[in-house]
Length: 389
Image (cartoon, rainbow, N blue to C red):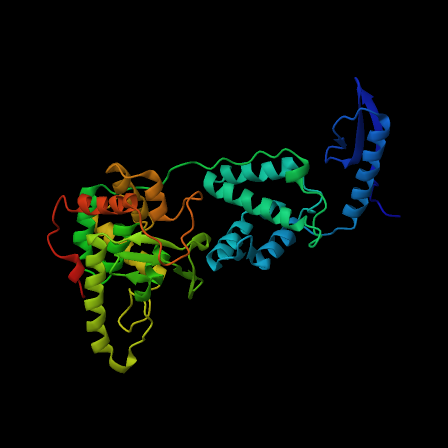
């Protein structure tokens, strides 16, 4: 005879309200686990709700999916609300899945709010950052919500809907910004390397690392002095490729003098490298390339920046903090917040720029030029734009 206990229920009255009470088993200490419904005006309403709860429990008993299998299938589904999910996002999800170890084997329909919140507390106690735990929560929420869809049918009891789960807070800040003096020392150090142009271009425009590596000459309008960010380069487990920009936003970035000088120097450098490579040259149309014309990989750029930042004594060796530095320069010079967000491409309120002929407003132009003014406050010992070694 099976030892599985059937779910039972009853209706009871407290005060002026009727409640459906579902007994769903016992805890490890032997206490009964009960689910109380919201209150109803009449007994009949409570009985009707109890019947529905019992039906749901029977369906749930036939579901065998664990948290691990639901989240893994959600990741493998590889589709987001915007279409195909980014390869880098999928890789990040797989890393987050490993943090869910303690709950992976729990029946998806049996997991409770206390078990989920217990996972968050355990991860924090082991030193995982609040931002990372916040990401674990988002993945688990998205996976169980996806599994609850009728077309999927993996989850019949979603605790994020049925119970009150405390969402982990995500701490604000954490990014580091270089001062003008520190940025100038870094630029001077970059002059000794072959990666000066793409890194300075990133600082001058606030572009993401992948956007810099994925930028093509055909996406630059020198007449209007703008760069159209429509592609990004990704690298996952040694696989490098081209994808759309984050959130599929196409935006135009005004090019200040610093950015234009980096592009001019890169064009000269590319011509020199092409002569040296001869027939081995790869015609990729990418702006920032290696000795054979192949687009730079994101990790190559990150590693180059890290080495330069260490030698320059910079406050951070994360290339992503160049974006924060660019934003700080723009805002500290009195730049318009909305214009700065538009340039950085992370404002949900701004209209997505999908038409090539969009006209850049004066606020954006003033914001991007403020980086020029900041960097022009002192002159580096050498010209980083002409670095060729």
